[in-house]
Picture 1 (cartoon, helix red, strand yellow):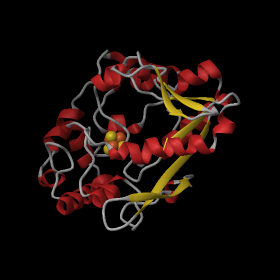
Picture 2 (cartoon, helix red, strand yellow):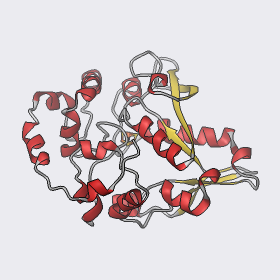
Picture 3 (cartoon, rainbow, N blue to C red):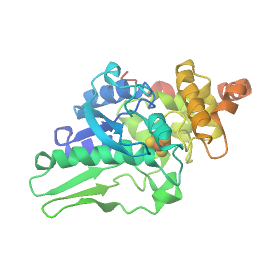
Picture 4 (cartoon, rainbow, N blue to C red):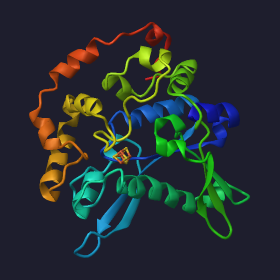
Length: 286
Ligand code: SF4
């Protein structure tokens, strides 16, 4: 989506806002920075922190931090509510597709707070446009979304959500990256997606690159992620959430069970997937 916006409006007229979570893939911050630097787009990465209020499940916003390097990211488990597992412990249950408080607290509300603080810089006429990369083919819920819809409405100003790549296919997105000589986020390859699947097959589905062990992750994605040493600490954190809340992290799968399983067969299966010359045609900027 960002590439489309750069082509249409110019990098100097855009700001990329990344809402950082300690549960994100650690590659995301350096990858996002490199892509934005390459394009000349100003990147603002921010993390929102919350603090508990009273004895129940309530929290209130404590701070919004600008994130420049990975060392700036406040990890989970420090006492403040810095990420999804912290909030899950505070609320006594993990997020779920029916109650996606992870998105609302750490993504939607953070972006809304930044837009509100910066509204006069973002638009002279009181009309702010927030472009999001959601596509109709990703899910029935996203298919129902309007390409333009109100996001924030106040008396003197308004922010709109705009979905510029809503009708695009997955293949179109990967091909746009290839046209610009930008390799896809490394999390796609790490979860078994081949260049053939990215650039040649006109199919939907496939792994996600936002939070590791996302509540929407498929069994295959989860198994790939569980094999990475860098994810062990998070996996153990999910087990802690399950033990303290008495609920599984995913609707039909538990993190504790995952730790007991041997995912080696999956690894073999994905190593055997086909690859094409597309990979060499895609010049890495990282
Ligand atoms: S990527 Fe998944 S776990 Fe992370 S905020 Fe979005 S829905 Fe929640």
